[in-house]
Length: 165
Image 1 (tube, rainbow, N blue to C red):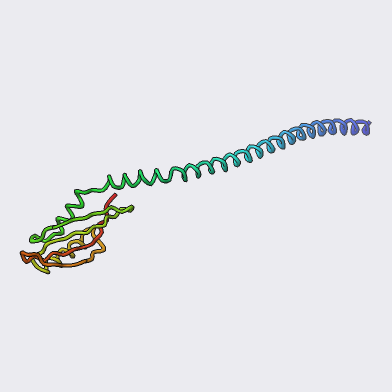
Image 2 (image 1 turned 90 degrees about the vertical axis):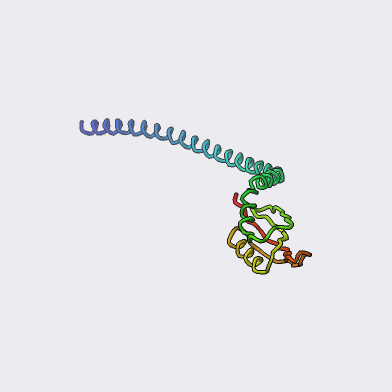
């Protein structure tokens, strides 16, 4: 009787173990199928991402010139001429005046400038250079000097002006 009870218990445990094995084996197959599907989706997504990145790169290349033109227009429009002329006026000594002015905007946030300024003496020229240096002007070079018929010193100056954007 003990043997038949043990045999029955063994059969009962084997039945439940087999049933559990079959359930988990089925779930494992479903999980493997799900993993394969997810891996396939990842590969598809990576392929799509590469294609999209390539299209974006091509679009950037094709639109680069337009963007550069628009950016240069924005830079030119954003330049504060009022601030520039105000700084230039602040730098001039009282007895000096501008004879000519030739600005040229660069691609960057800088303006190159050639100007001729009339001075009553060399000290005013030195004062102008000090004042320009104290403001946003740089790369100051004296290109030449002449004296006009009224005895004023006319200096041709090259410089740059860094603008705020």
